[in-house]
Image (cartoon, rainbow, N blue to C red):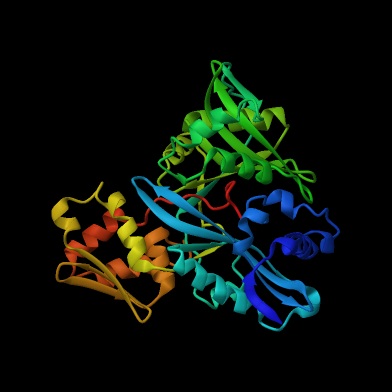
Length: 384
């Protein structure tokens, strides 16, 4: 056994073949993983393609892609883990656990504050990756009322800059370069299995006002919006137009809990259901994360409140303080839901505010003002 270590240049294709074996060809599907995740599984990212080899061949692999997220005025450093796999002949040897130890150590050295994981299996839950909430899901049905000045145009190389411009107006988003946007779009719209994708610019009076990335299914008459940006009313009207054009019975949409689109959906009588964030996450550096969020917090708290705030982590305990009022938590699950959003079925933060903060009015007021933070849906084009 050799590793965990980075993938060597001559091993990149072998790692992609292993990933395809586990996730695609081993299930009688086409070997599309390298096309679906061109920024994750590539020569440029091979240092973050962490492997263990046996007899000179990669047999276990964990990949991650570092990024940053705009949370209004703040920037949070994240990394997304995906395509985690071990060759069927080498399972049961705890190779994935060993690589994940290596990956987390490397991320911490690189200043990653939050690890985003596309799955929720025991491998992740055992190491304190947690599920959080913070989103709503809506189901839109056919609607005869259509805007006559609205048109849908599929996104291609001739108009993708318009989508990029719309995306960068979002206050909460992944930071993407133009080239990253193109590559993520290419990967996120690659068909596989029973799924295929379309991406639309939504024009009002000939001008691009919004866009959406939509997943379709070959065996059903429903669809899912994976990502949207731009004017929210236009997004809703665009979905109705798309439903009509594709003879669908419904299309689902996931939105952040504080997105204004939720008000517009409820005005149309569309019910919102609580939705957990896709996958799981782990806070790798709590003090650094909280310091990174201070520009966001300053938008909602006066200077005298900000000056009181202090955040520390000691031996797995997370402390928040506002002057003499302090709160200490030893649960990553509770911390995750406080910062990123509460799960509907686990009202942990309700008990926190009712009991632990009952005699700490200043801290209670501060926390309820700035948390949970707005955060992107990780099932968007950056999904890994």
